[in-house]
Image 1 (spheres, rainbow, N blue to C red):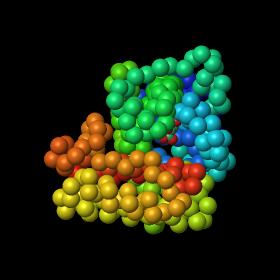
Image 2 (image 1 turned 45 degrees about the horizontal axis):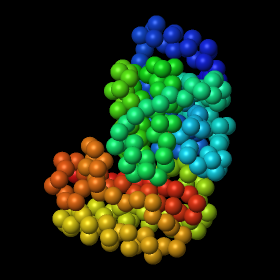
Image 3 (image 1 turned 180 degrees about the horizontal axis):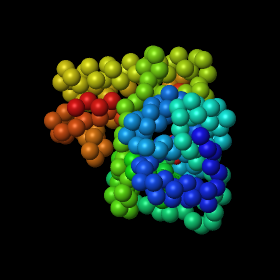
Length: 282
Ligand code: PAF
């Protein structure tokens, strides 16, 4: 596995791969890797000839400076994990490599998709994601790029970005990986104290309860009220949003039959750490 820090070297590698007619499977990450990321890499290995992962904590997608500062950075451990997964190349640029000019911050518009849920709480977040993902796609030129479904809205944003810019990359969404107690794997989980981690284990239980109520045709409003009441009883938790939505537009719905595909989206603070989860209901 080669760790690549500069774009000149990356360009050369990509040219050589393309000349050999090999396909590139790409997994963009912000590091602090866990089994969820590795499952994306494994999928990339099944579908493509060459596996490339990027590790870059992208400052432009953090609307909260404190969140950026506390984001875990564990490059050495990340490289060891990637090596074990037989990753071929890790792109590990510094900020100047990705954003050489302070003014070079592309602006994207995703309409309602960037205003809802994550977009409402984290203004500018998706523009930052689009900035870095567009740069990475242009550099790595992947045939397929693999994203975790935990970031449900992000996957939709990336698909919209690919459409807007006519990139040739195929976006492959991959299932959420969960800890033994059901908590969705996330780089942020390591930031939870032992007590917060215990409380966080309620999240998958509530998502399970929500799903059960939905299957029993409970009215959407009643489901949301019941789960929100449970969250409110946890002193260490603060709900950001819980919505049942049309999975194709992410607009909240009132009744199950107002959409073909339905997803429940949750964001909750456990202490200072913000966690998200989702479940596809139909
Ligand atoms: O999902 C993430 O880790 C990031 O948002 C991504 C896609 C790597 C862009 O920085």
